Length: 267
Image (cartoon, rainbow, N blue to C red):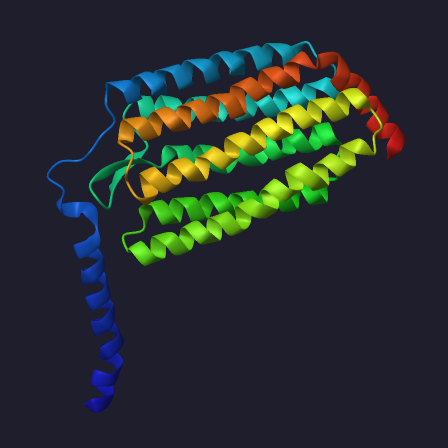
């Protein structure tokens, strides 16, 4: 009999842990703080801006040569995936309730897990960076997004902030790579116009990406921001870091072709 009780003990502990988690989970919410009319307006603006950018990038890719087309393909999928995410959020999909009875749009994390590595690839192509380094930076970036999501849905406060720290630990090497490693590579190409282009889009990306954890802190973190303010803040950063960056790359159409030719010479 003692052997039998010994084997059932872990199941008893598991049941207790599950009950504790259910007690903390937002299943007993009678009302949920949802996005308001201002937030819906921001979602609409984000959807339209990203959708228009996607269409423009598709049109440019169709008429571009192989060297330039890779940049337009990157920006097409960056803005296309984000457009889908914004349509989902605008349609009332891709969300759940988290601790504090707050609406949480997990659709944006699916978006970021796909689009931020593509943004890194876009920057890497402009810089002429090797694909092994690009892949390593993308790996750290994906871990950062996963940590942000896990922190957002955590019901235990201590666990939430551990996930936030894990995410920031992955964020630092990503920023370092964009600011230093990729820049050093583009400098070796000895093309002033490409160096200038990379500098502009890299710093736009770095600055915008620094706002994401700041918004997270006061929305998914401390829940100080309303859901609508959170949605507005994320929408502004998404539009600048995706749509505006796409048009900046597009404006350098002639430079990209020349830069590609030079990068092959330096290989």
